[in-house]
Structures are given as C-alpha cells and as structure tokens.
Amino acid sequence: MISLSAIRKTYGMEQPLEVLRGVSLEIPDNDFLAIVGPSGSGKSTLLHIMGLLDRPTSGELHFEGKNVAQLSDDELSGLRGSSIGFVFQSFHLISHLSTLENVELPLFYLRVPPGKRREIARECLHRVQMDHREKHLPTQLSGGECQRVAIARSLVTHPPLILADEPTGNLDTKTGSEIFRIFTDLHEEGHTVVIITHDRGLAARVPHRVGIMDGLIVDGGAA
Amino acid sequence: MIIWLLELFRDSLRNLVRHKLRSSLTLLGVIFGVASVITMLAIGEGAQRTVLAEIEGLGLKNIIVESVRPPDVTSSTESGSGGSGLLRYGVTHRDVAQIRGALPHLPLTLVKDVKDRVYCGSRRLNVETRGVTPEYFEYFDSALIQGQPLSFLHEREAMPVAVLTAEAAAQLPGIGGAVGKNLKIGAKHFRVIGVVSITTRGNKALVFIPSRTAESQFGDTSIKQEAGRMEFTRNEVGQVVMLAGSESEVPGVAAAVKRIFTKNHVDADYQITVPLDILKSRQRTQQIFNFVLIAIACISLLVGGIGIMNIMLAIVVERIREIGIRRAIGARRFDIFMQFLSEALTMSVLGGILGCLLGIGMCPVATAWTGWPAIINLRAILLSFAVSFSVGVIFGTAPALHAARLDPVEALRYE
Ligand SMILES: Nc1ncnc2c1ncn2[C@@H]1O[C@H](COP(=O)(O)OP(=O)(O)O)[C@@H](O)[C@H]1O
Ligand SMILES: [Mg+2]
Image 1 (cartoon, rainbow over the protein chains, first blue to last red):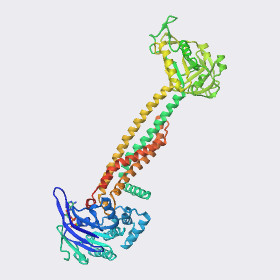
Image 2: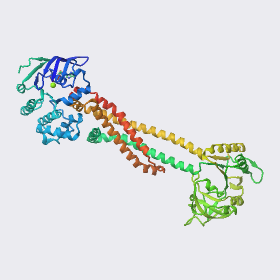
Image 3: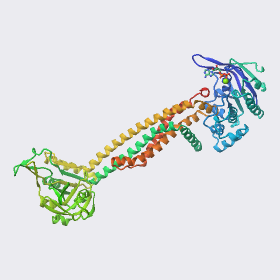
Image 4: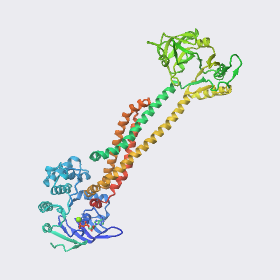
C-alpha cells in the first residue's frame, strides 16, 4: 500500500527543525498499524506525509506503487479524495454543515451527483450508528458522536486506506474503546488502517506497531 | 456541471445568509452603485429624448432667422424721421430678396412681429403676437387642438382672426374654450378661431394672426413710451423661416444665409437658428454626459468591489481550518478557488440585481424631481449586470487565489 524510505521532513528556513530524520516503513495492503510515541516526536507529520497532505523534504514515498514525488498537487488531491480517509483527534467537522452534509462532502469533490451522494452518506452514517442524527450540526453532538460522524466521512468514498491521528485522544476511555472497535472492524473488512495513539492499552490490541522517537523509528514490537 | 455550479451557488448563498449583517453591508456598496447607474442612465435618456423631441419639433430641415433688438438702443442706426429718433433693426426685405436671389428654389415664409399689447377684456395677456401665413404651420411640428386653423381666405382678406397656442389660451379669463373669445391687439379687435400646439424654443405663449392683417393693421413701426420718452422702432421682418430640401442640404443653405446676413448687418440684430446644428451639438453633449455617468458608475462600483474584496479576505482567514479540512478530504485547489470566487460573485450579482430593482424604483422619484421622464432600457440593465459580474470576478479572484494556495497541513493546524 505505502512504502516510505529515508523520509526526512524539515520545518522552517531560518531555524530549521528536522522533525523526521530518515523514516523507512513498509505498510502492506490490509495492514493494521499503530504508531506510538511521545508528543512532538513527529507522528502527525508522518501521518500527513503518508496521507499525501504534505510532501517530505527528502526520501521516497510510494503510494499504491506510484512515486508520489512525480504527482502534481491536483493528482495528490485526487488520490486523497478517492483512496484515503482521514480521522483527526479534534474531529475536524465543518461546523456550519449538518452531519449528513459533512459526510457527503468528499463525494462532492469526486463529482458524485447529489442524490447518489446522499444515499452513500446515509449508509455510512448507519454503519457508525449515527443515522438518527443526520440533520444535526456538529456542535449539537458529543465528542464520541462527532468522531463517529468523522469516521463515516472517511468511509464515504470507500477508500482502501484509513489514517487516524489520535482518534480517541479527546474521548473518555469507554467511548474511545467503542471508537477503536470501529477501526478494528474496518481492518477486518479489508481496509488498511494506520492509527496514531497514546493509549498503550489500545495499541496492544493492534497487530503491527511502530514506535517513533525524535523523528526516528524505534523498536516496533515494544508494547 | 450545471448542478455543480448550482450547488456552489447554493452554498455561497447559505454562507451569506449565515452572516446577514455583514453580507448586507457589503451588498449595499454594489446596490447603490448599480442603482445610481440605472437611474442616472434612465434620466439621462429621458432628458435626451425630451430635448431631441423639442429640437426635432423645430424642424430639422428648417433654418430660422429672427430679428433681435440690439441691446444698446442709442448706438444703433438712427434716421432723423420724427420724434426722438427711429431705431431700425432686424431682418429686412432686402435680406429676404437676396436670399431669394441666391437660393431661388428655397421655400421660405415670413413672420411679422406685432409689438402691441394684447388684452382680453380688461386682462392684459403676456403673449407675443406674430403675423404668419398658413404655410408657417407646415414648417413646424404643429397640430390643431381646437377650432380651425388660419386659412388662405383669412390671409387673402386680411381678416381680424387669431389662433393661440395652448399657453396663450390658458391666460384667457372666463370659463369655456378659447374659441369665440375676443382679443384686443393694440386698438384692433380680433376673434379667436382656434388653438394649436406648436414647438417653439421655450414653449412661448403666442398669438398668431394672418400675415397680411399684421402688415395692414400694424405696419413696421412701433412706438414705445418709456419714462416720458417716446421710442420708435422699425422692424421689417420678424422672422424668416427657410425649408431645405433635405437634412444634408441644411449646412449649405445655412452657410449661404449666414453670408448674406454678415454682409448686410453690422449689428447683432438677428439670430440664426439651425435646429439640425443644435441637435448635433446636443448629441455630442449627451455623449460626454454619458461618458461622465459611466465613469461615476465605475468609481462607485469600484468602491463596492473593494468592499467585497475586503470581506472576502476576512472570510478566507475565518475559514482557514475549513479549507484545510476540505483539502484533506480531496478538494483540489481549483475547488477551493471556485468556492470563494462563487461567494464573491454571488454577492456582486445579488447586489447587481437588487441595485437594478432599487434603480428602477428610484426612477419615478427622480422624474418627480427633475421633470424628465425616466427611460429604462434593457441595455443599461444588462450593462450594470455585466459590470457587477465583472466586479465579482475582479475583486473575488485575489481572495479566492489566496485561499486556494494555502498549505493544507498548515491550514489544518491553524487555530
Ligand atoms: N509547520 C510547522 N512549522 C514548524 N514546526 C512544526 C510545524 N508543524 C509541526 N512542527 C513541529 O514538529 C514537531 C512534530 O510535530 P507533530 O508531527 O505534530 O508531532 P506529534 O504528532 O508526534 O505530536 C513538533 O515539535 C512541532 O512543533
Ligand atoms: Mg500529533
């Protein structure tokens, strides 16, 4: 699915900060990978690079066999829209759009006609048991409910890859556990899932784990 | 594609409605700009048509030479025949004979001015009296309103009859129509036989009597008593009106007439009026006027456009995170660009539509104010529509480009 080799990422010009210092990682199809590491170690940066939101400063990234460096900005946007689903710690729902409209949005950018869009979005909301709240605004939902909607949005294009950046970070343990459950189900259904988490308990339930420290991969298996 | 555009438009509208106050304040700039363009163009058009109709009523093939009393009385030609002097001025029979000689086929008619006071009963009328031939009315855009016109019989027999313009008829005392009433011009009695409408400069109140009646009853000399001093003036021909064969012959005829008069007259005791020339200069003035209007319109729309740009830049900053989210879930730069451009366009076009409506609504008010009719033409509406659309494009592009160029990751992290 994704292969990273010697990925480096430096932020800033005058005071350069090397956030990733040569990360190499192989993520096969239908992998379930957990990335763990302390705050500020570069996990989100790595996830953004894997998700084609950001380009590495150096190193090679292959996504589904394609060398990402050779793709244009629009091609990357297209791949994000069709092949990748993002879930963020702070949900990142658009606050003035209803639940259903938020879920539909990725399909709008794939130019799916409105009727079809609605139908697929409803299915996805049903999948995360949020179909009874489709008219509500994100501000009217609890954290767990917001995250369910965000997951529905990430699924709406049936992407092979789901990337989640601390999806349970803003939730209590019980809700977090329920949300985590959805990711395990998605993995079982055939999606490739990469999840960043702080929660060692949850990480322990993931078959493939890597640790990251100061921009470098440390012993993967350690729990 | 069309559905996509409609959806963009719907979302833009929703966003504008979400911030009603802010949007309406921004719209006001465009609304007032467009409204003033529409109203000004409509009134300009109305004013132009009014004036043009007036000039055309004077007859575009006519060349009119009027006698004018020179302003400085004492310095003028005086001959010793009687009293405290005789002032001769204006168009003479010699001028007319020379015009006839130079342009033998040119139809012309003479008007005799009568200076005597006009009374109806005991009321003095504020009118000018003119002795005219029946053809006179054919030279101008005239129509009979009441009674009968001056005929060749009246002319041949030099009958004491008069035809009034509506402005003069309105001054007659008593109820009922003007026809049948009696006038006293100087010491002579006249019967009103008709009322006509005729285009003259300044819509004067006029009394027309047969030309021969004027000649025989009043002559060329008139006497005016002023501060114990008797003043005699002599004017042979009040006006000579010439009719060119076509509009293209007018300049040639006018030049020939001008030559004759400059040769014969030292004083400025005549005035040549060429309606066609007035029309042309009027049209030039109108062009300049329109140009100024359009310039003002552009400035006001510019101000409206700057308002839109300002608010769009604020909106982009406000929605940076949303832009990041949209980019993360697959929006291309172009999608973001279009989203914000369509919001700017929605504002400017909505402002354009509302401005059109307001402008049309303001026309009656402007008409009441200026007295000119407002003529709204489709061209003005389409023009302001096109301009407000362009304003949206011009002033929406920079903020939309700014939004589209944002880095997705930085936008997502933006607080
Ligand atoms: N745009 C940026 N410019 C400068 N530094 C950045 C930028 N984005 C992230 N960083 C820095 O990179 C480091 C890694 O950030 P991040 O990948 O978010 O870490 P994690 O997700 O592991 O907490 C942090 O020290 C952060 O301050
Ligand atoms: Mg992070």
